[in-house]
Amino acid sequence: DAGVIQSPRHEVTEMGQEVTLRCKPISGHNSLFWYRQTMMRGLELLIYFNNNVPIDDSGMPEDRFSAKMPNASFSTLKIQPSEPRDSAVYFCASSPAEGGETQYFGPGTRLLVL
Amino acid sequence: GNSVTQMEGPVTLSEEAFLTINCTYTATGYPSLFWYVQYPGEGLQLLLKATKADDKGSNKGFEATYRKETTSFHLEKGSVQVSDSAVYFCALSRGSARQLTFGSGTQLTVLP
Image 1 (cartoon, chains in turn cyan, yellow):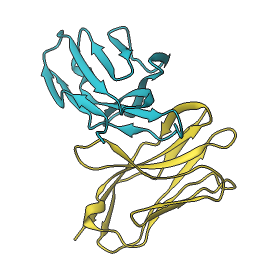
Image 2 (cartoon, rainbow over the protein chains, first blue to last red):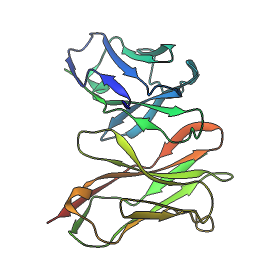
Image 3 (cartoon, one colour):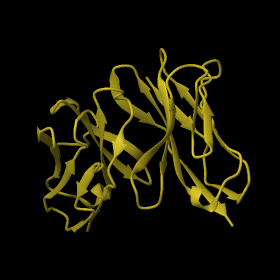
């Protein structure tokens, strides 16, 4: 079975540009999580969806960040406009309804904003 | 609120050495406890978990026991290999709240 799929794997962009990160969760999983990982701040939860509905977005740093989950098999995290301090690895994870505490992580998107 | 405190790294060991990475937690009630591993350039993978007091999680030679009295979930392995070099994260999950609270991670390097 395919795991969590993220695209792109690497993204280099210039300050001020819009960046869209994509995630396909594991089929049948009903919860989806977006994390950001940096050396300084470690692993931070940005937002969490359950059954496509955002449940907790308190970790979203500011209005420049937005996330959507239009259906059970797709989610996006958008940064507009991007800033150099947004440079990080962004992970998507999903978990199943049954035994739902275990999260399964994607390979991450490494974002560099110049 | 919930929190997880991990032993600070980095940790460097020789192959076949004994490994302990300490993890303590603060939470109300009875959280589930996890160890995740992150190999270079990859996402986090579940290594093991325990869902109630005195449970022992184990996988790939790693073990951790859920100790409620000391609020700890220390990771151990009797003989590490070079391939165990990675970052290890302790985490907890509290009841119906599906968010995981992660520790800061411990970098392990195993030398041949």
